[in-house]
Image (cartoon, rainbow, N blue to C red; front, side):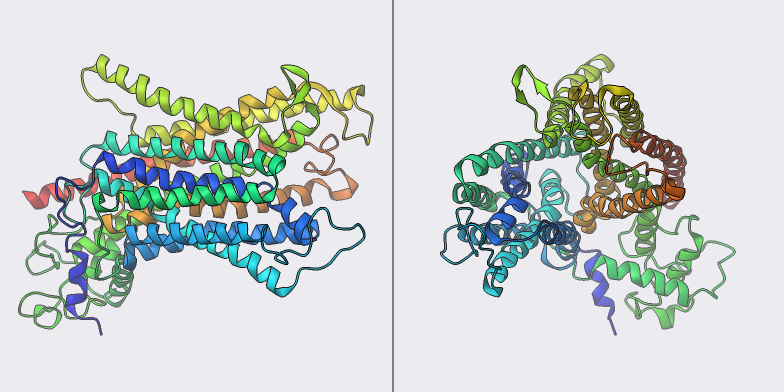
Length: 585
């Protein structure tokens, strides 16, 4: 059975008392460079990997795609696992260090497959009509490289945001310490997204170009070099980092104790009068003397029925699975209160899954720009959005906020709820624009300009009409995604910062499943009775504009849902502040 000592870690300082030489803004470039180089390496490898698997391993398109799907799934899952381990057991600095080394080993192993004789079945220049299958050793080598990179990605991406925020909060020495400047935290999250955008842009353009024109050895050697730079940049400042200690007892264990204790104590009666010294268990040094009224049933977890049985002579808990502290209960409530707000971001993830539709649209449109000989690749229209995102972040940080602060005569920042709401509205507007553009494109394709069944023909409509929707979506991400991460980090208990900064990724994973469900339902319903599906493989016969408008309707409903959630959350925060005010009085 857990002793009372197990819960002491919940209340011990999570930060070593930092010296004046530790933490601060000067450590952030090293942290951002670490993930920036990793992102450039990963997104430089991803686009052409199917070509490498088919050309050098002789795999079919379906087989290669399934392998890459599993790799992507593992890469999206490992940051959640890494966040849990970092917050509960390992710590953020060791987790990033561990992840950086594993990512480097993974890229080195993948690079070696282009140089070691016999590492792949054959090369592009192999004799025609020979189609050797990869051996178990060759597949083990390939899958090991993917596995190492996924593990490394989980280590780096799970903890970078929280670790960087720890450096900003270097003067905090208790578990609830938050950065003493909300604007500084917001700026860090903005610059994090800016650096990631540059890295992704570099990977999708320069690294892919090298693979196309200089071959696989150079094309995979560059990501390996980028990962080496990632490792070096992170360890260069290792002596200057503030390093957070994980709690002796996992906070998730503490939350489980709240659930179990409230259930075991469900028959307890609430006191008619508040006598906090005898009724509720208050941890020493806490600012709370009794719990808030919201989610009142959980308050039974901290009711002391018999001090002689429930507490030791020095007022420590005898059985933490029957009696919890008020702080444990209120921390758990704060996370439950955030779940509805977190769920409002799932619709943004569903919207993000329409990228493949834009590629289909771009294929059927005029992609020439500047000269008759240059065409924008269909998959490259996302670069317009990345450039818009970077431009907006610079404009917001360096022009809009300073000017607004100067006019108001005090520091001005857009409230996190305001930014989330703006992001959701921009997402709704983007879907409306997408539907209108697709409706125009389809009308031009079906009114004689393109003959039936010639889906490869080009509609006399510039593909640049796709740019506004790409830019609107990236602006929506800039507002909503960054605001969500800032909210989670600020409101979650300090010892769950890594998990907080990865919750949006979890939402994206759920959004992918939800998007799959929506498109399956639309496909099944609209192709009944022999009709053409709205999401037909022939984009000119389908009705992708209707699909966009369905998503727009869901997005509008999601915004209304967000308004209710934000109002309820703000009311809950006010109730908690009132409780603290009464306790202080």
